[in-house]
Every structure is written in C-alpha cells, then in structure tokens.
Image (tube, rainbow, N blue to C red):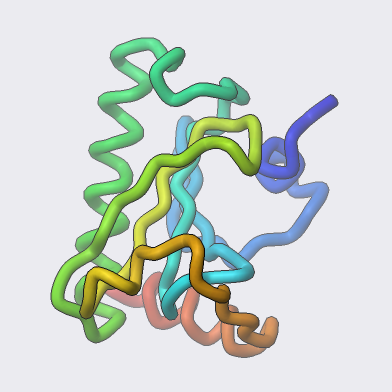
Length: 130
C-alpha cells in the first residue's frame, strides 16, 4: 500500500509544493512547527533514509540544501534546521524548519494549524525566491 507521500508524488493527494525535479519533491508540512516547515522526499518510496542508495541520499541532501536556501530568504529566521525522524510516515523524508530558537525544532510541542490559504501563501512566497 502506497504511503501518503507516494500518494502526494502521484498527485492523488494535493500538497503545497515548494520545489520538484524528477527524483525529489519538497512540500509544506500541513501541521508545521514553524511557518515554512517543509518536507523533502525522494519520489522513490523507501522507508528508512539510510536504506537509500548513496547517490539518491546525496541527491536528497543537495536538493534539501537548495530548498533550505529559498526558505532562508523567504521566511525570517536565523537558520534552517534539519531533522530526520522517519517514524511517522514509512517514506524517507527530511524536515526543514526555519529556526529562531532551539525550541522551534522541538517535535514534542504543539504543532501549528495554518489554514489552506495560509499554506498556499507561504508556498507561493517560497517558490518566488530565485
């Protein structure tokens, strides 16, 4: 059974896309820790990030770096934090989170609940960065 991320890749479920190429996809987390919280995934469904072939893993990190640079320009923050947890969805993914404090990347705190309109506006703001 395909994961929710595979369904997003296959456009069976909509997302607020930030960037995409033939191997990777970046989209906003719908329950973010901070504005701009983005998920970066390989399109190939592989559960555990360290099961990715070296080339795919390296490409994922380089793609995440490109996305992080856009996030940094679009969302006021000190840095972009990166986290790989991999327990909630069995599809390798990286969280990119705009940070102003250490608490901004604390996954045990309550998540934000932005409207679809707010998510669309944030995604547009990030996509507009060159």
